[in-house]
Length: 259
Image (cartoon, rainbow, N blue to C red; front, side):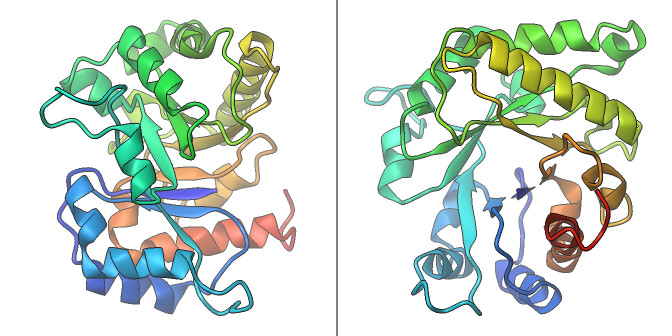
């Protein structure tokens, strides 16, 4: 699973789509993009949605999933909010919840994130829950304690089989710094074990990595056993670069390169 998170960046979608398609042939695994809400209606994003509804016999067309960067847990008198039902109405495939930038700039805490997870769980949307520690917490050696606390939002919940975790160390996002691949692998295994132990149905989730993922370092993460893909930020803004990252995962996914 490879996801592009465009955040609040303005993107030339015509160029992005053309560059991406030129650099990356269709693949058989989950690839998605999360543009800002208003770009759901961009002609080229709509074109991606059309690809998503293509005839199953047309194997030369892309199957790109369109996702949201956030969602509200309710509907009605909540000015400016986008509800789960709205996203479902427009056939949005997934939603990112609890990104560290939402936690920092919009003061989202576990209570709010728990409400969002409960609202999305059981819907047609794939929830992608973001968790991660700060640099200070990493230096103190309490990364796993921090992650376990953040995972309490799903304690006792029966999770859908498509529930996904994105491990994004806060200190790695946009910094060019990353943990060692073996450390990422260890954390991903820990996350899978915790979710399995606290979810009502003992789900072992997909866990993808995010935080300064580029076409230069992606392979070093992707070959690790417990890394199930990537949530890509800055590097996803260039269609060709994102296509290269998808190609790297495709080679490993098809086991033509050792994992």
